[in-house]
Image (cartoon, rainbow, N blue to C red; front, side, top):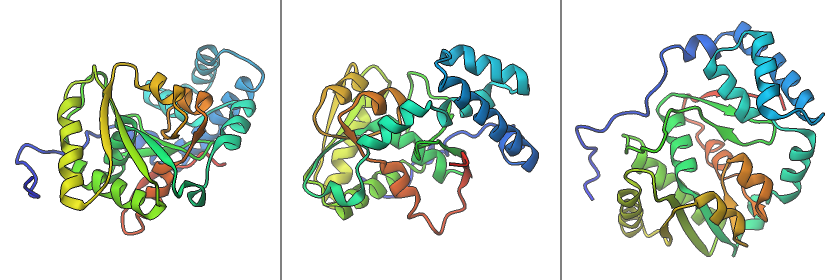
Length: 245
């Protein structure tokens, strides 16, 4: 594969209002208050949709702010459950790992392209990029694959498989790209297409790398690969909204 980017490659799209919604101190304080209220309601068994609507109305949050809150919040029970199953970097040596492919790719592409990413109470970073059933390679995609491969080498895992969502457009192309990058860089991984990737990840006995809430709640064990890689990007100006955790 040619290391030069295609002339049609572009950054992961950024929303024009995000700097106003997430980049101002007053907006961040507003978000933090809303997050505390949302987690309070979730920890008292309020249905998520109803709790988010209630908090959104109280703080007059627009859709993108509510999407960010959705990724940052969880109940006390969920938080304990996720922490109990989370593995440290030292635990990964010799382990089999499954990667929630589009979840990881889009998060890191968003971060590297200057988009806002949001650190949840569980320590996972999430994005609110608008990708629904259609994925398109961007100018950061190859760098993301390289960063993931180098991180997995550092961690000493034995078996790695990218799990792509088969119904999403270009998933087959991305599977092929994973193999091309692996050949170029000496990475040892596999890639497969699944019609129900979340279920596949949950039903496996391998360590899962994902920030998807359903996957984290129901998987056997997980590792916070997104946070591990982001912590190493010291030379990048990342736009991170913290949860206050």
